[in-house]
Amino acid sequence: MAAYSPCSGSFKAAVNTRKVNSAGLGSKFRHMHGKTYGACAECGRTGLVVRADGRLPAHKNPLPVWVA
Image (cartoon, rainbow, N blue to C red; front, side):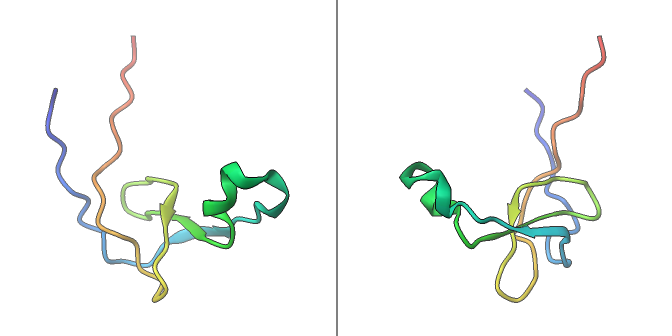
């Protein structure tokens, strides 16, 4: 398996942020309620939890899509 380098945009602001409202989904999704998720503008990775100051956590580039 190939090693993937960290995204160089790990400390930039997120784009396409959304706040999850999972109050009606039950206890299985309670940990997601009220959290803000965003996407990295540089590598396109989605589903990253946005910090209180608006920055993204350190993350790796998404896996490449293999075309058969």
